[in-house]
Image 1 (tube, rainbow, N blue to C red):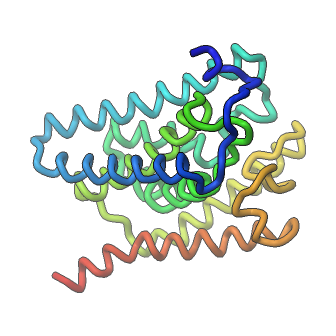
Image 2 (cartoon, one colour):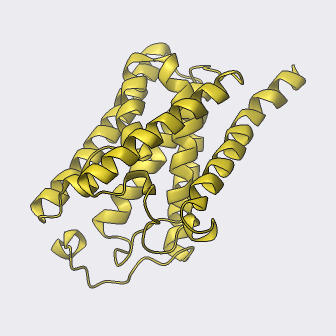
Length: 238
C-alpha cells in the first residue's frame, strides 16, 4: 500500500489518454451527472447536506495533498501556495457551496470550470499513474471544482449572466499580472506566466512564450461562450 503514496513511485506511469485516463474522465462525468440528476429531486435540507459533503470533499482532498507534500519534503513556496486558478477555486468553490454565494458562482462557473477542464484533459502526472495517490487526488480536486459549479447551476438554479463575462475576464487578467509579480519575486511559476509547465500539456500547442498566454486567453473566452451556450438554448426553448 505504501508504494501508492511514495514519491519514487515504481509502478506504471501516467499515460495521456490511456485506458486509466479515459476511465477516470468517464467516472467523473458519470458522477457529476448522477449527482445532478438525483439532487434535483431532493429537499432543501438534503441539498444542503450534499453541498456540505461536496465542500468537505474539496477541503479534505486539498488538505491531503499538502500533507503528502509536507511528509515527503516536497512542500515549497514556489509550488504549493494556492495561487494556481484551480488551487484558488478549491477554496472558493467550497465557500460558495457553504454560503450559496452568487458572486463567487459566476467566477466558479466560467473561470473555475474553464481552468479545471484543461488539466483534466492533459494532466501533468509524470511518473504517477493510477492508482497512486497523486493522480487520484488530482482528478478528485479538479472534478469537484466542476461538480460544484454545475451543481449550483443545475440544482440550485443559479444562472450566470452574459454581462459578467468581460468583468470576469478583466479580473482574471489583473490577477494574472499580480501573480506574475509574485513569480518574479519568489522564483515561482504560478499560472505558468514565465514558462510552460513540464510534460505534455495543452500549452505545448499554443506557441512560445509569451504568445501561449494570449492563446490560452483566447481558448478561455471560447470556453466561456460554450459554458454560456446551454443558457442561450434554454432561453430559446422557453
